[in-house]
Image (cartoon, rainbow, N blue to C red; front, side, top):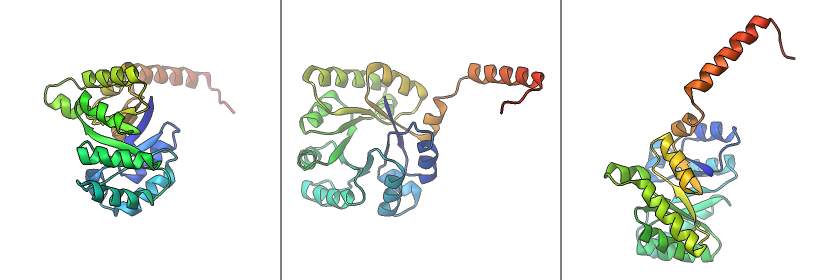
Length: 217
């Protein structure tokens, strides 16, 4: 599974990228607002840090305006992935952009039918929103499973990008089902490494090592 981080916080992105575990970044208008920075400035800085795709989202709702905004965003850096809403205009824009060689991320997916249409439109990534479905009492993992089955049935190249992730179990379950990517808030990505038995074992090893009075190197 690939790991993207879902943030526009440059310091968090740089820290996680230095681990070698980061494969890309997703942003959206809300995350740009939270950063308090100019969209071009912060997106360019993110693209300079990360080698993988950086999703930058259009805010237009009509096809022609989407293409205009997409052209503007694509000029920021070569690794920009254009993020589009799962609407008819968004799918039409997706088809046009992928035909021109741009990476696309179709977002706000809440059904398998929507995911099927996105794949037909040639989306590079489809972003089903797990947490928001869970908030409604709907199992988001069932959606991931349905999309995985449909995509495998027809050998679609579109990658499943599990989004709106709230817990470490969301990551684990999405990986078990076969999601290609998980885009994760920084705190959740850091929490994946944590386990109390790891901490306990490390403390014991260090205590025993201290008793030897030795040094390495």
